[in-house]
Image (cartoon, one colour):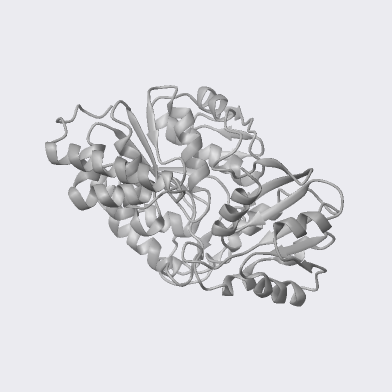
Length: 412
């Protein structure tokens, strides 16, 4: 457990109070939770506030291209078996949002923090985490995020000499390259369905060979490490070879992988796999993701997919044809304004589904689906798309701001 911290200085207390006031004003004005603006105000008054707020916590950082928010929630639930937890559960994962979250955790023992990939090294420096969970790296927001190999290199540099236990996905070569600079790594065989960003060796640039579940560089010998934890179907295998059943209310293989990593993190803090996995069952939805809502007397399941890897995982969990599907894509600042990633998504997997398209960039999406040879309808909005969709529960897949738009419209 982290040692007791010094009481907050008057300046830090003022910063926390001012941040909470700014957040409350923003929320009252209907501009979201206010966590980001509150954190920005607090950090302006005390630039060192994040490190001060983290002093008394055992901090766990979670970073990845996909699955950060869900894994953060699963780890938080598991660790509540050992003590109070503070977490940025709504996904505000840059320093301002993280600062706001920690400002509400004065009585917590653990801080479970989702971190945007670009900010991992800086947040790790400020919070001195006890553990860091690294799930995956793939192409995302091409207009703002560095190429994946460059991002892995930044992580590798930032983790050099870190005292944190790094819990890392042994199946993603970019994650292995990034984590290998750390002296204390726990490898988890969590799987990797999307492989299109990891065919070349991050160490030397050679071609990776992928026999079965293994991978190895034929030129420099960089290879998949031997995992001590593994996802095996509906079970998590621990370092002793014991198999623990995964019972989740969240759907899909990707969430079982998130649970396997979360169990390994919880074990680092003394929470047994059985206890951790039982607590994860309590999670029904994460910030609206996977929620089933009723709208216009129809059931809609809301699914978030932000990049090619995320869409691939989402396609694997939707109900089969002829289940109707609504796709919504925006390209606002939070999404990334470059929509060229649409051409990397395996949309032909949707063959046989009745498809409706909405969102700011529905015409970009329409061109992509036209080339894929799919039948679809372009609709003005969610109301029209739901109205013309054939009977049955509707699977609604949207990227980040499109997902938020939908949640507001359907009242969730």
